[in-house]
Length: 266
Image 1: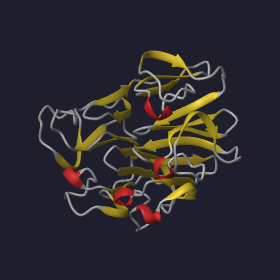
Image 2: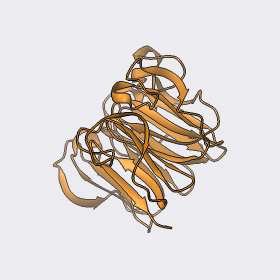
Image 3: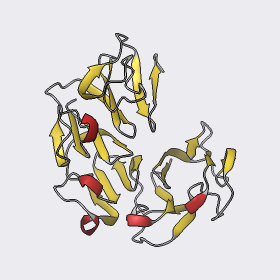
């Protein structure tokens, strides 16, 4: 399923409708094959979707969620049933970015702190814990400090860029997607990928990772079974490899086994 924010501040969704993930206040409901507006508000600024839940932020800095409540990933102190329309999480007004990763949720504040809640599979909390007994159903501060940009993949791994431009990863290590030249073991706390300090924005697919540098180059690693690394082959990589020679990449995002990247100046 897909959720998108328009330039007029409206939010829209389409695709599979189970668990209330489309936010149309109908659960169960029929799947939707074209965009339908969620409510009538025009003050949405950002949205992110996991496997069956959504996170969103309004222009007033409030945090909202809907969809499946399993593992506490909506952040409203509950793990039962589902929510089929946007529900505010807490009362804070300083949220600036959201990232939904499978059954886990991340959000950043205007002062630079990151928070996490939901499932802690393969140690995605990054605090040396793992499993249902360590998960939270409301936001708790992320252990990793000075994180500027963060993205996560469907198979429960995180790729983060710190404020000093260094690159870190944690979670599931299969197929080399943590970028540390190995496939094992999983990491429940952040490990640095190389020693460079010119990384910009990360992106993640199901089993592969991407990251741009401040020089405009694009790099990829992890699973490559369908050519999603953009290397003109299908060989997996366990450390970052440059994609082509272009220097105008802005940002890259990964899907299940596909990559979408933006180039240019806007």
